[in-house]
Length: 400
Image 1: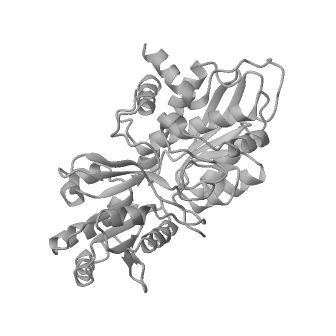
Image 2: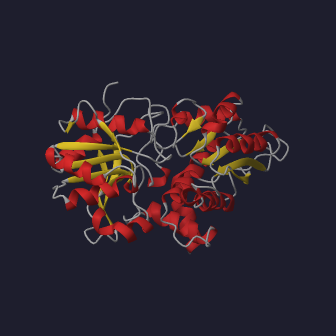
Image 3: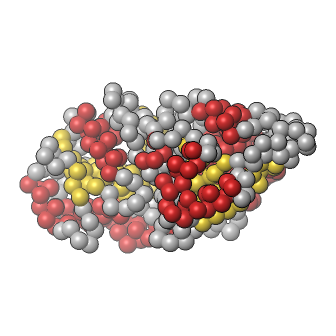
């Protein structure tokens, strides 16, 4: 029953199984009559491995489900794995190896070092699907993401509207210090806040804060003096937890605390009470919701990645979605896929939802752009769990 339920649910994710093609037909780079080869590059060692290692399970689960259904056009998807160690140079080396020695049709990525291989893969017209943790994802049209953390495009009023509707009037925007997001998101957040009437310092709109180095107490006193009631960061909760704690000790009445990424279990364990009420935004269905799409994801993980003790990890779900995007691209490429037909076909998809895991995505119109809709989730009053504020809060894209 478990397997049949999963197959039925995921049919909506990538369509019905298709008729197999002849064994000796449609041979192209990375493609034979019976298989499609894909390279998977992720960070499994080094400083960022804790964040990205769970992605392998997400990739494996989604590809295994499709292979059990017979593959795409009768072809099994065969993956080769490489660890880029969080290094751009290593990312280039392993990507080149996968293309030139393994003959990978496409590359699936879960890394913050994709910039290392981006130009090489673009020059070779190799499809790449992954997490847009770097600005380079907005530069090359062979690179596909279901959402962007950094962008060269216009901002959206979504974040400002959310802050204003929850009582925020004067905001302190704090710059991230992690490699997972760039300062560009902070500049977009500033635009979003100002457009909706939330005040941000004119001379110094983004405040750089280094945890353990910059004085959080001094910054809290500034917040008191300037009547700050909102703290926003394009980084993670870890980037601002010292500031939030110091602000509350100084008596600052914070109406909104907004971060781009959620606190992890270790941070909640240590600072849960300080983070109570902090809200973060996500470009996919939050784990806290009852959802057939999430049920399918959890069933796939239980069946095909049983070693994963906690499937509710962002990079695991993102990898699962990215693998589904790869499958959709193969389907759009037709019975005789080439890298060009894959890129053109997936770029032409205007209604992608990963079976309900992400808001509707137009891979052409949304390329390099911030989403207009996000799920907003906050740390509960107990400081130990999360609760959904709004599963699909939408604003509008602003003129460039």
